[in-house]
Image 1 (cartoon, one colour):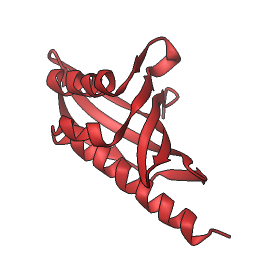
Image 2: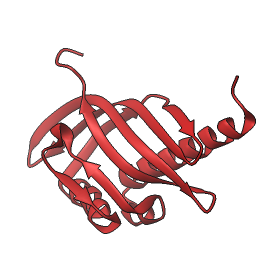
Image 3: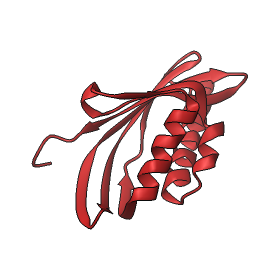
Image 4: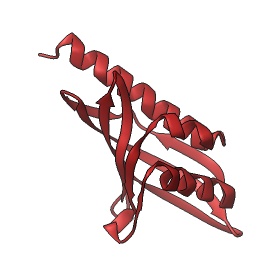
Amino acid sequence: MIHSSEETARKGIGDVLRRINQAWVKGNIDRLHELFHEDIVIAHPGFGRREAGRDACVASYRDFTAQAAVHEYQEEDPTIDVWGDTAVASYMFRIDYEIGGERYKESGFDLFVFLREGGNWRAVWRTLLPAPQGE
């Protein structure tokens, strides 16, 4: 049975996810500052690199949007699991974009960890998991 507090948390986290994606898709990168925890970490696909700290993570979004022309972006409804003041949200995405005259079509899963502090949910960790080839 889902408690009303869990449902309220899921709705709040879903709202933060929408705001994160609207910020980068619409080019309002500075809005990410209020949605990211000051100690957020973004682990790049394959975990070979990582960005740590709000400023570095916002800069990574800024760099992508400055270089890429996004032709299409779609995401499915997220699955959100909540444990007190911690939550994990994931969803499948598809993106079609162009960088330097080359076109890329990718799909996969976006995975976020959220922390609630002072009643606000903020992203504290993120990675992308590419979809298996052929999907």
